[in-house]
Length: 164
Image (cartoon, rainbow, N blue to C red; front, side, top):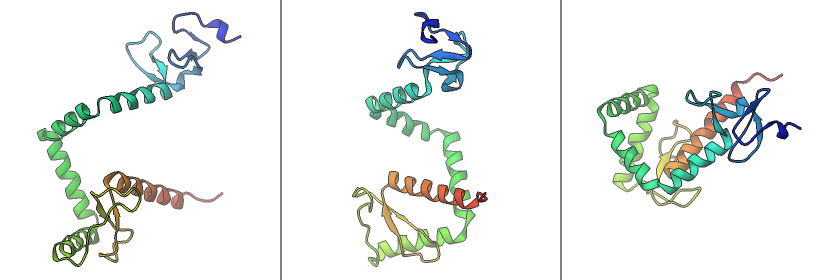
């Protein structure tokens, strides 16, 4: 019944809209807002739009990486990165102590860099589960390191939520 209300053009009926990519009929909340569209929302649903963006990034990865590198060299970006770095160094004195201890241990040969513990990549970072033991580290590549911190943040979030 609802499908018959939609013609060839992307139309809206009772707060519903048809995605031109997957043809699904969804509420407006499933479409990103866009001021240039007649109804104020994109013609693709959020999941189709995310998929299109992911595919575009994969297809143009080198161009996008070059763009990101060039953008990172802009003065305002350098200043922002400097502030983030300064905040990181001053947030907890143990962090810098551990970071420096690992760097000194690698330089002296007491600690050896290993492949990523999750995916086996060779370019790794030292991840500390606890800043109380500076030389106890997990060797993780950048993507796995980011993922580990997301997991830790999620655990902290769940610990803060009150139980019903």
